[in-house]
Image 1 (cartoon, helix red, strand yellow):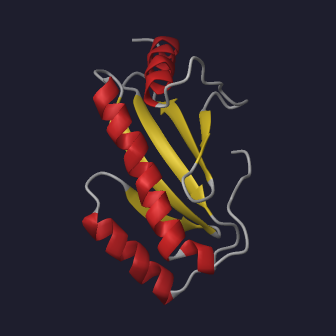
Image 2 (tube, helix red, strand yellow):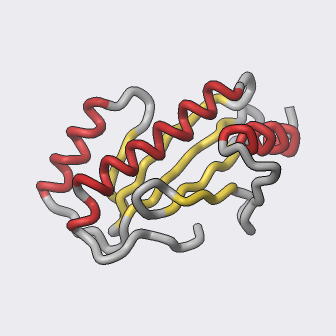
Length: 139
């Protein structure tokens, strides 16, 4: 399957997930969305022939790495099924990946909202107190 076919399929599914007639890609070919609580999320397609769909959320700018942060992210990861969170260069990241070959609405919808709800939980309980502003940068 060609990447442009996968991207078109993902775009149609995203329109249904967020109940909009159109979702726009950014300059990298990814689809940006706001995150619940604060920050930004992107959905993209990657791979050479076995494509996968990734969902990535960024919370907070300049979040300091600390034992408390690592403990809290570990607690969240311990209760997560397919999402994961980690710290990278001052940003709390949430990621989820899906195989693209048989992706359906239910799978993408579940992943989309899993990232959103993990972000909201992290923002409300942890990140909001660690940084002055959400990460609203373009990827």
